[in-house]
Image 1 (cartoon, rainbow, N blue to C red):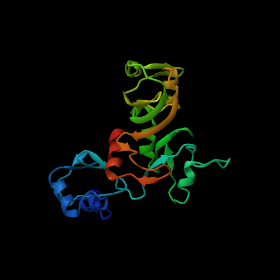
Image 2: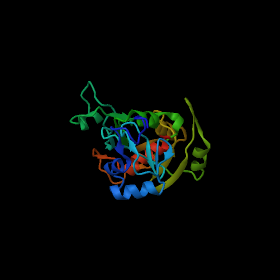
Image 3: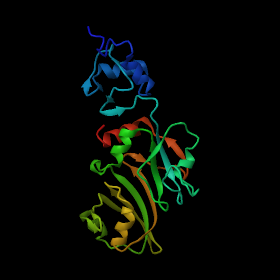
Image 4: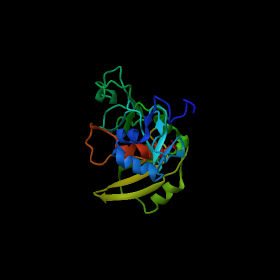
Length: 250
């Protein structure tokens, strides 16, 4: 048998051990997942216990969700405060995202950006493949925003936004719209979009006559801000990372 076979390569690691090290399950439970046909490697279901894989190159899914095996990959969620720049450094010394991770040894980058006045969820990673796809418009990753606007909103506003609004750089369509609250001449709305053009939410609401006074991004795909405090960073959970990979077809 060829030494290139993944089951016999001396540098390979047993699949159940790899799954256990990735935090999927105990080694015994991982063996049960494999036996049940719930694990695939490089697109093919694996049922044999002796299968060895290279954690640096193998693409492993459990129940259809991608499992990140490389220990050097970092996936973080930041609640970016208002007034902070979405840059890793600033030559004018202004507060920026890079300040919060300056002590880390990994070479991280931010996935997309939020303007200085916009708060909320920003992803930081050194996972180039995932980051590129999350930012690329062709993958249409959902982004959820909470926006505070002045005034009483017309009943047909949601319908107008879902139908599409023409901006100077082309039309923008809102995937979903929800009025969250309205009082004292202010309205809080939730918007879900599949794109991330610069200032797109602010420009969209300007165009329909309700300028945004406060804007917070609350979710990217299935990764949610929740009760994470401004300025705090947390590692993404394994299911969250898997959901991001699924959203971009990895």
